[in-house]
Amino acid sequence: MTLAITPGTTTAVPAVVGADLRVPLVTGERVTYANLDHAASAPCLQEVRDAVDELLPWYASVHRGAGFASQVSTRVYEQARDRIRKFVGAHASDAVVFTRNTTDSLNLLARSVPRNTAVVLFDSEHHAALLPWRGPNVQRVPAPSSSGAAVVALDRALAAAPVGPRLVIVTGASNVTGELWPVAELAKVARRHGARIALDAAQLAPHRPINARELGVDYIAFSGHKIYAPFGAGVLVGRADWLQQAQPYLVGGGATSKVTDHGDRLGVAWSAVPERHEAGSPNVVGVHALASACEILSRHWEQTVAHEQELLTRLQDGLRSIPGFRELAILTDADKVGVVSFTISGFDAGFLAAALSAEYGIGVRDGAFCAHVIVGRLVKQVGSHEQRAVRASIGLGTTAEHVDRLVAALRTLVTEGPKWTYAQQDGRWVPENDDRTLPPFLA
View 1: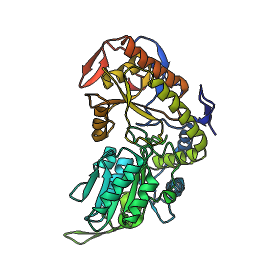
View 2: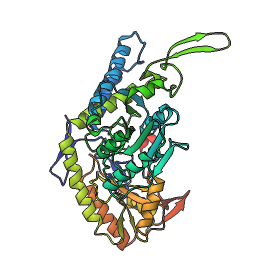
View 3: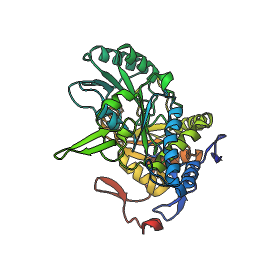
């Protein structure tokens, strides 16, 4: 077991790869990298890396291989379904379909719903959940101002939805604000109206335990790269009937049980779920990494949540002391995970992110975070004319020094200005005369 005591806190949490990474500054120094961009992609857990290293000598083709290594890889791949089903508290009968990421999972679900399904979702969703649903039966509900208002709005939207199959899409934790949505309450409303509910857990899964049965959700989607397993795997977990009735998401080897030649056409018998939607050689390494990360987090939820909340309080208190700081918020009454998006009056978000990186070795995200509709609305509410914000996001690799460095750096940029000169290049702010060298493997 690899745990790390986070400097400045009292909590031991699973250790991440790259915790001691040092990056160059434009001023010539090198500093330990302050990764405050976990919401985009989380670093790899050391235990996940170890699990991958353990598997690699046995890596071989999955399914249909007679070789011993192939049998081992197949067992690893299939056991991962049960490990992930346990992680999300799913029913034993629920399908576990491996994908590339949350976006892939939700597109698969969108391709699998019955024809004329009425889909209801809030317009504050990430593009992965917002964009796959098209057509006249899709109802986008304006983002509510509170958890209670969300429940009322969904009740009204479903009452007005067409008769027939119905599906609600909801995020577990906003990737813009970090706010926790009232998933269980929304699921009760959905059930009362005969609707199914799909949970986008991309931002929830790394931060809080999930139990599908307790929440009352029918589908859950999340990504490995958000949950400290950056090896290119995602998953869709949920009721198998719609997935079984749908045409394969991709066609090819693995999705077929038999192909016959009838001269002018091919006869195809498709595999059952989950193989039906997993055509091609599966990503056994990514799947093993994802399942390993799920098990590691499951053993450390108490420490993980305590670590995050301690640093989140420190971050919010520090940022609120900076002149012109405005935090973005959707729900006024919600708890949140370690994500803070904000604007600072008079400063372009892209410029701030560039200067934080170049002069202080801090990684944050700037832009609209693949949630353009809600970010555009929120920045307008806080008085910004930009369509962009800065997002600082906390994870297992975050330390108190990282948080303090961000706060101090922003205060210096706001009150004293940058030490370096910057210019816009292809729509992005970059430091001029930047002669920092890239790592050797990029040479």
